[in-house]
Image (cartoon, rainbow, N blue to C red; front, side, top):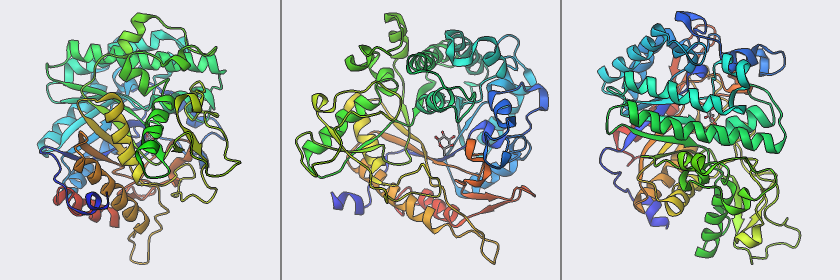
Length: 477
Ligand code: FCB
């Protein structure tokens, strides 16, 4: 195994090295060219919801500065750029009449990317739901939102699929449902009971499936489409096939209400028979399980450590199958064949309190997804590191922690490639320091530092590092 990590592996031809961002986190210009209000505009105005009272009103002003940001991507040498389209720019009221000026921004962006030799990869929903849909029917609480999402997705495909070859439907259903409708720390800030929450997740999955169908119906033939999910990754705590298999089973169980349902077209039995399971029809499940061209995985760290069920490590380790990270129905661990090794309190983290570190989580995510569901392709649609990023006396940021993090995770990506796992691209989160949701601007993930007062972009040490990675096609992490 060690050899596989250390020896250079050839990345497949056409492997995409990219960076990623999302609309609300970077664009600003929230009132320009007829953009409608989003749930994040509304949420970030509520006192106490966002650290330091930050909002996305200006963000990185990417709406105006996109040519400069594309220049930065050219300097990095990336092949591709994953961005998101703001639904309320294109349909200010969520549905009805499209706003030509809103779409025109994305046409300018895509044309400029293509002119720079950078492939655009567009996400259709990265959390900025039109506020009008929240007001009209409670957003994703209603299946109507899934229906109008598909209309919007089909419309965008009809206008842009001549220039965009890959669409991501939804970004992290697992996150925006639980954080937005469960704990309420993200927009729209609701705290629903488990049954209602599972129903919201079901509607979001349905939105994904309907969007896949709409994009295929209205886009150019051959357009690739898939979801991006931050699956809960079970990492085997010890070496050996028994632990690896236990981790694989646990990954299927923990993602029961989300990625497992999408890729199997059904909810696993333990989830479907739970009293809080969502109401759904066989038709819904067929739609949710619509075949995809790739699976996007957003991997930041380990979800849980897992052991084979009969491993005894310490007498007081909790039984497996306790509260689940993504709100899924508990599955009995022993019956499923895994047990949890709880996180140590001192487990390493990045500058974001939620981000636990283990580079091998990237390898295991790719391996579990391949073995469980065998998708035609996997794209790492996000991976990145939060860092303090204090500028030094020379004004530069030496983000040695981010470089070390990326080096270690990319070595694990190379391991995945060496084992022929079908990973076809890697999108580093993020190009720029940006609006990190409830954490505001203080949590930084960018390769480029953004000075909030002047909007000046300054490449960090990690930008030089990533340029070397891209230049050497992954041989030099
Ligand atoms: C992911 C989100 C992305 C960004 C990173 C740090 O969960 O998809 O928008 O906030 O985390």
